[in-house]
Amino acid sequence: MNLSDLAAKGAEPVGALLSLTLAPPADGEEPGAWEEAFITGIEAAGESYGLPLLGGDTIALPAGAPRVLGLTAIGRSINGVPSRSGGKPGDELWLVGAIGDAMAGLALLETDAEATGPLVDIYRRPVPQLAAGRALAPLAHAMMDVSDGLLLDADRLAGASGCSATIDLDSLPLSAAFRDARGVTRDARLFAATGGDDYALLAAISSERAQAVRQSLPSGTIFTRVGTLGSGEGLSLVAGGKPVELPETLGHEHRAT
Amino acid sequence: MNLSDLAAKGAEPVGALLSLTLAPPADGEEPGAWEEAFITGIEAAGESYGLPLLGGDTIALPAGAPRVLGLTAIGRSINGVPSRSGGKPGDELWLVGAIGDAMAGLALLETDAEATGPLVDIYRRPVPQLAAGRALAPLAHAMMDVSDGLLLDADRLAGASGCSATIDLDSLPLSAAFRDARGVTRDARLFAATGGDDYALLAAISSERAQAVRQSLPSGTIFTRVGTLGSGEGLSLVAGGKPVELPETLGHEHRAT
Image (cartoon, rainbow over all chains, first blue to last red; front, side, top):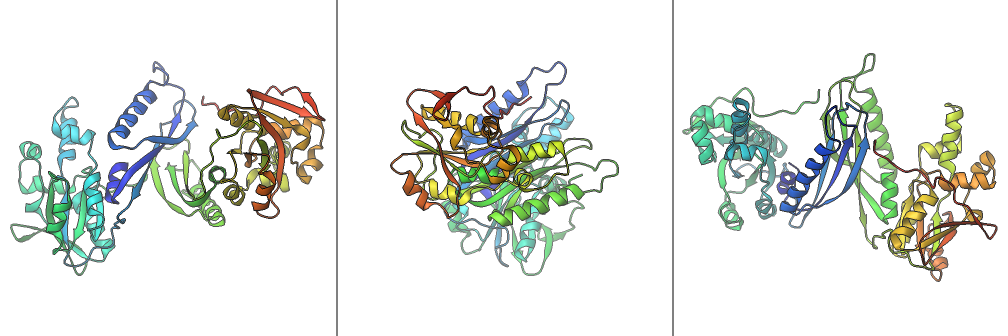
């Protein structure tokens, strides 16, 4: 998640600060075993993406307290930092990466906690679009990562930009694994468009520039036009060239209890 | 504490990231009252020191969970970043700021929770030595802030620098309020040298350069030579030109339970 945030700002990773709570182990738990496994995983991920653990903080809590983990990723942007608010009417909305895989993976795990396969892998280890983010940063009018569902996040980008947005359900980039697992029905497409945890990038790009942008992306990047920004406000869906009613929930809203 | 860490690296404040846990209020507690007061205080402190709240994270926890707060301060160093390890034999150890006030304030509060006055103020609202830190950064061989007690932190700086350190108890910068409250006996000086929470700066500076350094500091800065680095290792104390036995505890050691 942190690395996807950096990608959405066109930043390259510099390092991470980790804060974590330490409490006496629960009965039967080996002291420090969880923490050791966690730090090993963080270090492996950091090594993969060039995000060394630079420091942080530890906090002692009493036994039985919940664990609280905080990771701050620091990045460096060289070619400008796109906001959510720079989109303009007439811009095209492009996605880097496929959507729906993570939620399809989670659905498999909810049916069978031992499930494996590419969808489960993507749910468990999303891949941040760092190289594409850096390439897009100087060229996109607006950019963000899609973590809470394409429809919800597109609505946020359009709202911040003072535009309306239209998403074409037929255009969604669905992976082969997703199609195998869930099909390509209207419901499957809506599932993919509202599911969240995708860590794709959503960029608003002027239509004149879109093909040039494609050339600047790393080869093999999944790069798909999924809609447009317009004047006015609000989100619309189309499929087969016709309007489609919005689903009740556009994505995953975070709420503090 | 965060701002003192920036001061010790010669950095100017850029902004802060705050993570905090949110849990349902305890019985009889007004929802969000504590959080609102805390954020108001953080914002006031940030405004004083040019450290705007840039972002952060919130985490929902169940009722009864302890609050966990994490603040990351981001700073910018222009003239070099002094480490703890650059001190050299023959360097003089200089302090920016007085020591002992905060612990004297805490001692007053432990006797009378309603106590007021300058020592209590300094305990509750330590002042980070930001301007002095920026001035010293390019000139000191090594620097750190004194947060756990002068003797402990001087021992750490000397150890990191591969040197021994000698501290002269007679030289300690004690404020008028401290002298009024605790006197200037050997015990009072040891109390000040081991107390912690001072947020003074400790710098190792070549003896040829010390007077020039003084000229570069903001006028009114309390700047005191408290000792020297030597070859070898370990910490020594002197008073009246004679060796003094080290106290059992050099300062406040943090231990995770």
